[in-house]
Amino acid sequence: MQLPAIVPPPHGTPWPEAMADEAGMNWMWLEEAARFAAENEIAWPIDLRLHLESGYFDKPPHNEVLGPIRPRGPANGLVLRRGYKIAAWGETDQVDFTFSQAKSYLSLLAGIAVMDGLIPDLDAPVRDSVDDGGFDSAQNRPITWRQLLQNTSEWEGTLFGKSDVIDRGRNLAVEGQGRKGEPRPLHPPGTYWEYNDVRVNRLSLALLRRFRRPLPEVFAERIMRPIGASSDWSWHGYSTSMVAVDGRMIESVSGGTHWGGGMLIHAEDQARIGLLMQRRGEWAGRRILPERWIGESLTPCALNKVYGLLWWLNTGHGRYPHAPEDSFFAVGAGGNLTWVAPTQEIVAVLRWEDPTAIDTFIRFIMQALEQ
Image (spheres, rainbow, N blue to C red):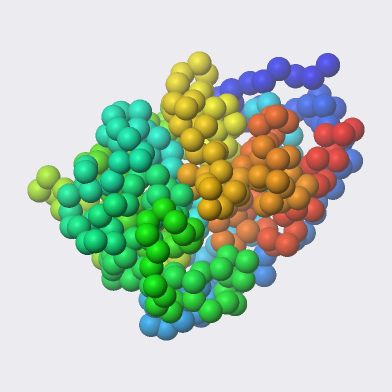
């Protein structure tokens, strides 16, 4: 008999655990998945500043680190089923930067803004509600909220000392190896998909303009405290990203750690966020995010079928072949991943995993489900 789904208690109380057979899983494959993840740490240096300054993401002078950065810890992670912790390895309360998983957290904040009426229409031009000069040019004037969230905006400009050109031509399949950062003709907004951190940071600033409060403050109040997360996490911008809002200076946070900054968080808090998404925005009977927003977030972009609104999808098994097709993911460089398999009620968090090992880990979990 399988255990009923639970809501884990707030941080500070032990997370309920279940044996593999209680969770309807084969213990040998589950144990093999955890062992495999622990033994396949990414070959990144511990000193992340050196890694960023080495030119891995950007060649000089575009590799200047503008936000806080600190050494990372070892690989760690955990697996939940129906809210129970069924496997864990390493120190899951180890707080580290999580790179582009912060993009998915910006998506959650956009959902709050929609729920609060601050974004009445995703397909309306951003300039209709954000008047800060960032959307005044002919290229940027038509850009909509949906296009910023789908990475199809083709926004043009320099923000906080970084030009959007830095990430033009970026190819995630060869991150750290391919050529990028060269000017190319821009397409009309909504007609070209490109992963571009400057444009995501432009979305973050636009959300700040709508909330008129620091985004970490909103994130804590509307997401993290209601789901019982810890207060160990923090979200950062750059030394250059202070902006004036209603007469006070507020830091605009970044959607990644490309140039330092971004989200510092541990695997247990990330698992809570994954569980919130797996449960379609509801937590202990309370509506945290609109269910419609979860649906919007997980709808494939017409220009990239494995991308939604700052969440990665598995349409056609195109992201991870062994994951169920309805899986979705928050993904960050360095092998940082939150995997949600809603049908199977699985949430898994991997920190500092060799990216080439992730699909094998997923295969082991799926084999464990077959018993």
